[in-house]
Image 1 (cartoon, helix red, strand yellow):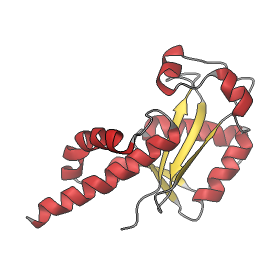
Image 2 (tube, helix red, strand yellow):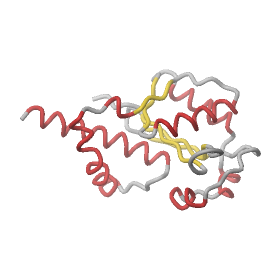
Image 3 (tube, rainbow, N blue to C red):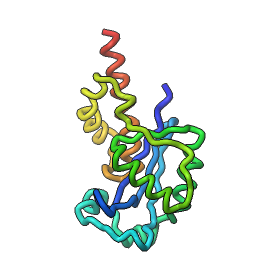
Length: 169
């Protein structure tokens, strides 16, 4: 089974003024990676509640973050041939991805789609419980972009197997 490519973004907060601080992908081969993003000077919004979730400080982003244009080029290098990546929070992730590419001055060479487009009704019914089980089984550190992308991909694979197993009964 070929796995879909998943993308996840962590951000400075939610809503107006928020921006991407980490982007991660889970590739079709099951490997995953992520990059912290160095905020631009005009990106000032910071929600302490979001920091409590992802555990990434502004100081760490300043030290370890990669420039916006570098992250946009990396995403294009990774995803152009694949053509599409999927997100479970398309509304937020697409907005943050658009902001990243806009400020990088680069056009994305892939598109982002909503993960729910791949899920049948049985997968949707199994999704939450399966995801919670996998968090424990895989030792996933939630709210980090690479781990969350991998979790989504593995949840997709497990619910697909369970869904197909039920269909065969």
